[in-house]
Length: 311
Image (cartoon, rainbow, N blue to C red; front, side, top):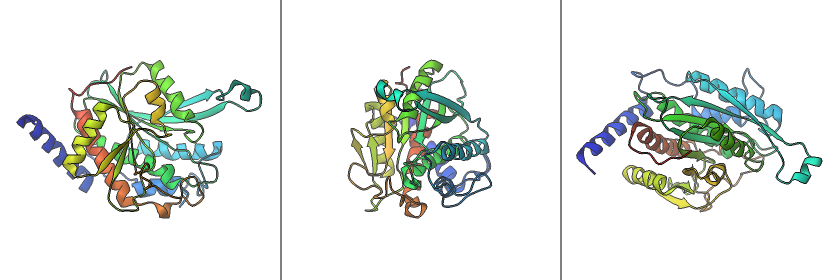
């Protein structure tokens, strides 16, 4: 590595070490919402003045309450929460005669680059859950990762790329929310650099800290691998999975999924059950994965020369 690049990377790590360790009050106040609080409220471990404890995030009423939480947390970071309401037909046209079309709402915010015309790095996680499931690991943990990363990105003194953070509705229903959001992005004509999604990030039974990279584009895989090696984090690549990055992969965009070691079987056994509760979440692992992603994305958005996205 050239000396200039090595020095730049070292500076980034030092800044992030401060951000992640003591929240760097020089650049801003400590975020008021912890990852534990995010998971607790979304999974119904506790309620708030917005709502009694949620039992799940499946019905329209439950998902609306979840969005209110998400909006509140975005506004704490002084970012504008935007709703993307959609309606999609059922997968088979004949079903439209019997069932209502899919209706839902994605929620997103934009952390602008120094140059608003720059590319967009998309970070996403789904906020819904299966019927009757608290969804602490699947996927309040992924939401917590996205917010944990965002809390640090807002502190960076400069950004060469825009960051769009989106929380998808109805992932549990044929990836409806993310499929609809792909169409929305195309309509907006945003120049998309890459898409990074987080789905299940709160389980590590063998306690080896291993992280799965799902269906990564070659450039993103190399970038994540470089940082994993520097941070001594064990990773491996999975080539498939039924989660939101599939919607963007089908659209030809550079994608990567970051999550617990699902393909190796080291994932929450309570997935899609009423036992996917707050007390089963490994927050040490969640923070470990969040720190890794924060370092990667921070380097990505502060480096102007890294460019391989597409519309």
